[in-house]
Every structure is written in C-alpha cells, then in structure tokens.
Image (cartoon, rainbow, N blue to C red; front, side, top):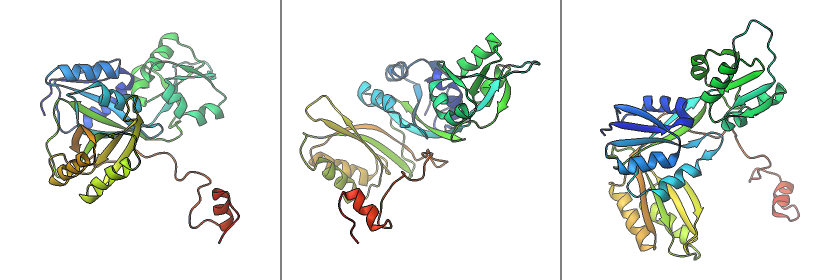
Length: 310
C-alpha cells in the first residue's frame, strides 16, 4: 500500500515510532503526530494516500474502547489494514546532578504512573501527572528539580539528558501494545489473515448472540475476539468480533451470508494480516478464587451458594 503521510498520536510517540518500524504494508514518506484519535481518523477518511496508526489494546488495560468506538462509529470509509504489537519497558530517571538527590515525586503520564504502582509504593513517592512521558522528561530537564523521579522509556529520557535511577520499574516489564494501521482500503489477502466486523442485532430478542456465533462455527471461522457495546438505538447492543479469515475467503463470505440470514447488520472494520510476533497478554495467570472441576466439593458448593456436594 502506498502512503504519502502516516499519522499517529502525540501521546504515544515513543511506542508509535517502534510500531512504524515493524510495519510491512506501507512506507510513508512523512510521519506526523496529532493530538486526538478523532483528528487522525477524520484526516485519514478525507485524505487519499493518508494512513493512521492507533493503539487499540495493551497488556494492562485490554482493548482501548475509546479508540475502537471512534473507528466504528465515527468513520464510514476507514478500514484496518495491518496490526502490529510492540513492547515497552519503563525505567526511572532524574536530572543530572553532583549533589545528593532524594526522589520524592514520580512524574509521568497517568498510564505510566498506574503501571509503576509497585515501584512508587515501595519508594514512598508522591505522584504528579502530565500529558505524556515526553512531557515528563522535558519538565524535569527544564526545571532541574532533583526531587522528580521520571518514569519513561529509556530513549525518551536519554534524549532529554536524564540519568537512570532504576531499570524496569513497571509492574510488568515489556508490557505490549497492539496498534491498528488504518486507511481507505481493505488489505489484500495473504493466506493468514483476520477480519474484524461489527454486528448489530435486529432487536433485543433472546438468542441473537447464539445465532451469530453459530454462523461462524458452521463455516469454520474461528473467533479470536468478541466484545459487546450498548447502543442508544432499539437494537440495544452491537458486537465487535474478529475471526481468523480474510473477507475475500469463501468461508468468511458464507458466514456473512448466514449472519444476514440471522438478521444482523454488518459493518466491516477491516481485513488484515495476522500478526505473527509476540502477542498482547494480561499480566495475570488466573483470577483468584476461581473454582473448577478440580476444586473441592466445599469450594464448588460455596460458589453455587448451596451445601457441599460431591
């Protein structure tokens, strides 16, 4: 795909740069940062040859509903054409000084502060929020405040002349973020693709979701993601689904025909190559207090609110 301009979010500049380096379907001639998701999508929708890069999922917060909502409900001619997953580790930094410096306040964007909770707590730090890790580094560098502990990626901090205090201070080092590349066209099939659709149900009647899922199962389209979103319309809910097949594959076309027969309204969000690298995973193994077949009769009974059974 040819692209003269690639747009990304200012707030995600360091990660976006890494993601751009992993793209395989575009080679933009110019890269520009914009303040909001709406600006990126409006520009892409109305500017031929322009593409956008948006963060849609990360290890700590899961799917980014705000970004996906803008894509689904705010555009008519914008499609996902590629996905990229990149990792990031946050380190702690301070301004360069020969005098003893005792950090008292952690400064970074809200996402980084949240993800470095353990480090902040263990070091008894207060917190100060700014708009981005770039702004945090610039604030510390320009103020010369030796009490500030900046939480940021290494390349951002070093660009502002800060020195390291501690490495890998985030609760989950190498947390990952998934980006969507969006443009005005659906990507060509590669033989190993995903398709993301929005399914709006014909009305709030029992069994809609079951019928939708059967349409995919009957035509051997494996679903890898399913999310519901409440609507203000009489349909009440829509479902954002991602299946392992390209829009051009016969089995996906057959599944779509079956969805129409079940009464679904369908919006194509995109068809794009399946990312083969490291995936976005949660920093958890299993919810505590989970109960299964292997659990004791007493544990199963407590979950059911009934006396223990064998």
